[in-house]
Length: 210
Image (cartoon, rainbow, N blue to C red):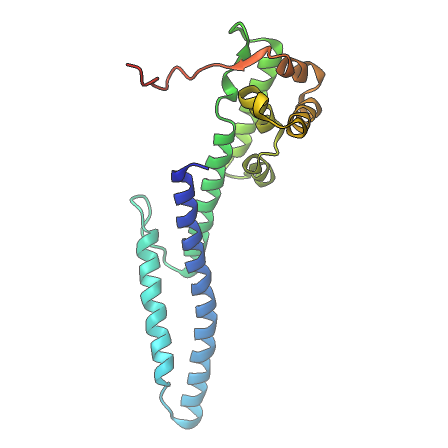
């Protein structure tokens, strides 16, 4: 995991923790306020100072969270439920970006001579189809996103074989080959194992030699 990705995940985790804490404190505060209202009606007693402190602390944290969730495209959330939904959406976007990154380069798979062989074409087609499913905002494929992030997806295994097959242990290599064979069949797996495929360099990325 890159340093930037790790930092983003840490920030998201902290934001999620803050939302969860606010949800719990809201429930506690609602109970305290109901009890204080009952006391006020029954005995004429004003709410205890602790209730006021709880309310002030909750409002302060809520204002802080709203400010942190405000962006150029969206104003601050109007409610805690909206804040929860917004954090959930950011998490989904982060998972999707991470999953798409696991496929990086596979849309440039080609034959060892630079041509697009049937095996390379099949892989490219599978990548394009998967990318479309991942970016479907109406119904994102959460299970596949998790599989890509964990490295268990056949396309991730295929990428490992192409990029670092020699560095894999025997067990890892056999597992990766079996995963590719199960997903794509014998011809693609054979092309990968016999180094008939490679990932073409991304010509849009500066080489740094200029």
